[in-house]
Length: 359
Image (cartoon, rainbow, N blue to C red; front, side, top):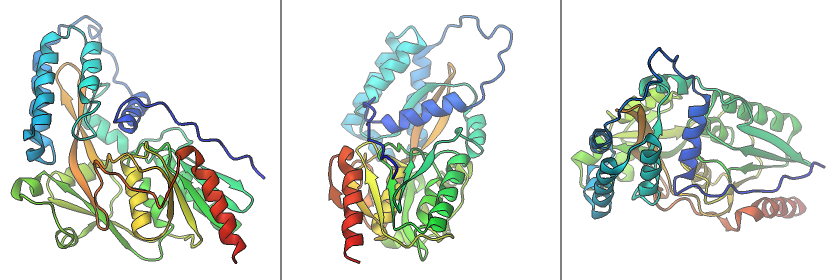
């Protein structure tokens, strides 16, 4: 019997913890541009121009213009202008921006120093490999425990696929998927969910600015199902599509080998973004029992834009609506069995034992 790993939650950085960690990882892994002669010279940054571009970019690309006319957002916009008038260094701008946005009215807004253009970074993300460890498989007797720490990286996708092969080969009695420290990412969510389905499942849809600019209401189920499903796997293609298409429908198709046994998904308040999509899909499809804490409620799609001074502004370009639960941003996905995240694995193991004992 393998010793089960104890859950050690990372102290919070902000309301957007998962997003910050994702962007820090991207910055660390992405290839820096070659430094040219003279680039290291001190250059005077026009910080008022930087923050003016930040506010202009948010208004140009945010998924819902109406959310930018609320008193809460207008206060943030004014605070950012004041920040630009007062700071004298990049570090002060970044720290001040994080402080202003830590309790912002919506998630997925970040500012970081850029190592390459936003377009170069978008090209890189589709082929990114995080270096392994995004998904790891352990066993407790005949119970498979699949810990998925991120939804980013081609190697994370490969690790998930390999895990399902091993689960099938060993004929696992049950599967526990640990998403307690998963702050999101991208399309590693597809294999994670698809290997657990017997038939295609309509999970939900991303709703973007073209819809919100033309309607004064949220889309209903008929609106969401009126569009053809998007089943791609390219971040770059997805971003391009959601900025043009009012609704981008997310459907999961079954994959082999399929695991038909009982599934338990562990969650915490840090389970965010694409990880929440997985939790909601498996709960809505009645394919898993969710154990732990309510998820973060940070379910938006984020894209990066260049800002003067060598910065990247990331902002939400699409909102997500579950076919069953509705909007996830701000509310999260509730567990079937509510428990402290630290206790979730022990509870799942006990539930497996009870289920096995009844057979």
